[in-house]
Image (tube, rainbow, N blue to C red; front, side, top):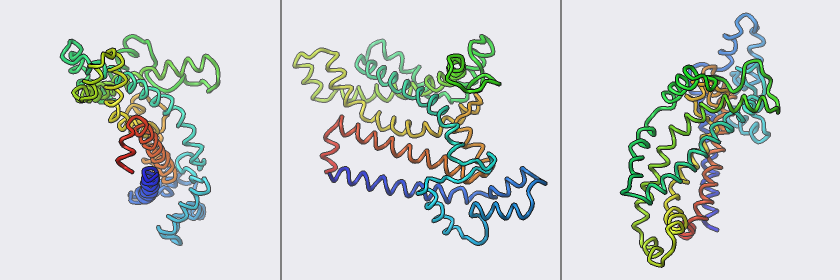
Length: 327
């Protein structure tokens, strides 16, 4: 019970701290969203309308930052994330929901594939340490150091420009309206293949190396030796004893990676002009769109916290000793 109470208190404090930083950080930037909005629509916004916008978004001189901070919490409790300056005063929740499925669908699936494939390969390579399987280590190390944008540019040059197998940008063909049709689904898969392949190849090496190194450490433990002495099959020793304990640190890293899925892979989305949350965040930052920036950061924060809660639950299930240590 103490384990869960401590974790709950920790995550509540972390959520409060993250939301507080989320509020104050954009306001430390030079300029403000209303000024940026007026500059973008020069000649179309009257001084009276500008004053109304500042009052509407709590940026007028009548309310200080502390008052704005409490107003922000009140809006959050009412489920109101505000309105986006850079998107025509559309509700922030609608703007985020238009980009969120693209990021989760692409980056989420690619990350899960990379984790499962890399962890499985790393376990097998670690189990067969000293064999020819170790030749994969230099390649895994190389690809784990390759930046996303470099890998993306190579993929575009090879598979799009030279071979013409896949589109080079966007999530679907221009002029196509999203719909639940096989043609549209095919377009989404075709356009998402290169960025997904980029994410998998760039992150696969890290999962392989992490799991392999942990497997080598775990294989020297007494419980693995005892399991082998009992005459258990190699497959059972590998997956039920060695890999189950070696994968624990991987889950912590995977939880953080899952959390940042919502933030997207910003560079990848820019290279492929993909309409995800990462590109949306960059646009909001350039426009000094406080409400949209805060909304995106809030979603990222909550996702990271939920992913860590998931990791703690899985960790406690795989290793009951962690619950006993916290009790």
